[in-house]
Length: 239
Ligand SMILES: Nc1ncnc2c1ncn2[C@@H]1O[C@H](COP(=O)(O)OP(=O)(O)OP(=O)(O)O)[C@@H](O)[C@H]1O
Image (cartoon, rainbow, N blue to C red; front, side, top):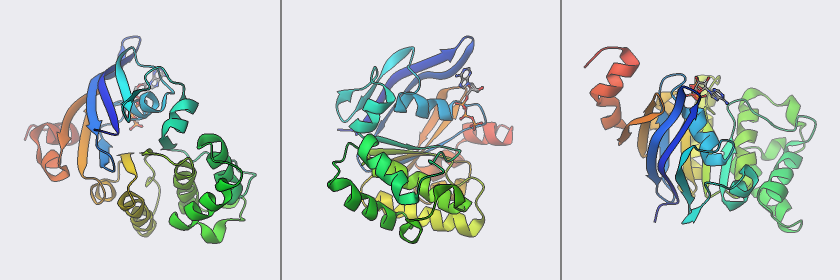
């Protein structure tokens, strides 16, 4: 059984369609990459999955349970974790405190269980040495790590990563990718929107291309990148 399924999910803002009958399954533990031109509907897709946008039609099923009408908080508790394109930590709290908030409120961990869980996430996301640092004082790479860690602290079954590699140097990007690969290897399913293609394709098993809110193609990354439709929208020429 897939961990997450979208069935004909559609959403429009007036005349602008950001999702048009989007359907796909995410297998438990799978990593799926999402690419597409600016405005294709990638972030809107995350908002639909996380519950920040309500679809006009269609169904979203998490682990066999229909969550289409569930608000974001309930979806988070049900196992959908999310990182944002622009990191959104509590800047005046420490790194550890940020994780504690996520674990207690986003993951409903008990006061007894949360501290140990947060220490584990700090270690797994490469932030152990920064635990006491105020989040607002972190470097960009560390803020990206914190964004990942906050999502992981909610104990997600599926984690949504929105352009987490953007703005990093090549070396920093490699470090973050290694962490994401490890998290994936430990069993968390991932949907990752990313413009840094080589980072994305070094992790994901499948790639989905969105264009004008539609799924243009979904499949193995090398086959998707070699497909004429993708060449057409990225290079503006028919292959
Ligand atoms: N709440 C909203 N109301 C009206 N229009 C919206 C809303 N949210 C998004 N849009 C529009 O929907 C379109 C798709 O936006 P979305 O952010 O999903 O695209 P994207 O593929 O993530 O783009 P990018 O790569 O630039 O981040 C854009 O034209 C955007 O301006």
